[in-house]
Length: 217
Image 1 (cartoon, one colour):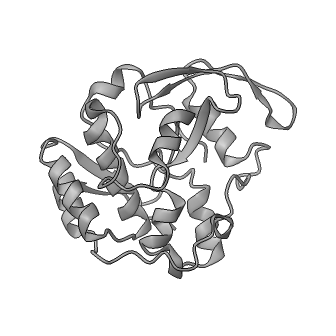
Image 2 (tube, helix red, strand yellow):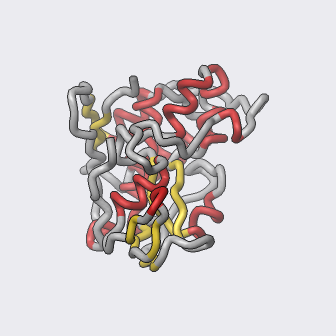
Image 3 (spheres, helix red, strand yellow):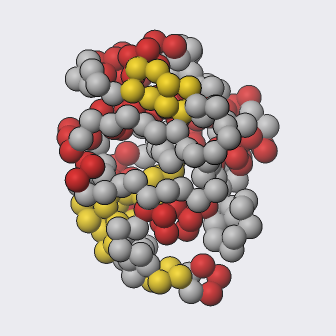
C-alpha cells in the first residue's frame, strides 16, 4: 500500500497525533506518555548488524516502483515526473526534520529515512528477527510514519542516532517522538534507558499528543 500524503508545510509547526494507516488492521491508540511507559526497556545489542541484513528498497507491492520511490511520489508537495522503470525527475518535497523545501530528487537532495534507523531497529530487537521480517520493516508502506522523505543533509546529521543523541527542529519535536514511539510500538521494539529518559523529557512538552498505530503483521 502506498502511503497517503500527509506532510504539508503548515503541519511542521503543529503538535501531532500519529495516525494509523487505513485498512483492516486493528489500530491501538494511546497517549504519548503511556506509549513510552509501555515500551520494554533493554540494553542495545549491536552484535551482528549489517545494513544488508535488512533488504531495503524492494517493490513488494509489485507496482513497478521500489518502496523509496513510492514514498517520494506519495509525499511530494509538487509531484515529480515518473518515467520508465519509475525514474523520477523534478518534484518538490517538504523536509519536516529541518523545515526545508527540497527541489528535485537527485543525489544529495532528498532521502528516504527509516524514522527508526535500521541499526537502531537491530539494537532494539531486530537482531532476533528473521530476514523476512527485517525486509518487511525496511520497506514498510503499511504505516504513514516508518519511512519519511527528508533533506539529505538532515538525514546525514541524524545517521543511526536515537532521540537521546539527535532531534530535529524544535518545532517538530512532538511529531518526531510521537512517530518514533508509534513505530517502536508497531514493530514491538525496545528502548534503552537513555533513550527512554530522553523520550519522557521531550514528551513532557507534548501533553496533547496521542498515538494510533497498527501492529505490524
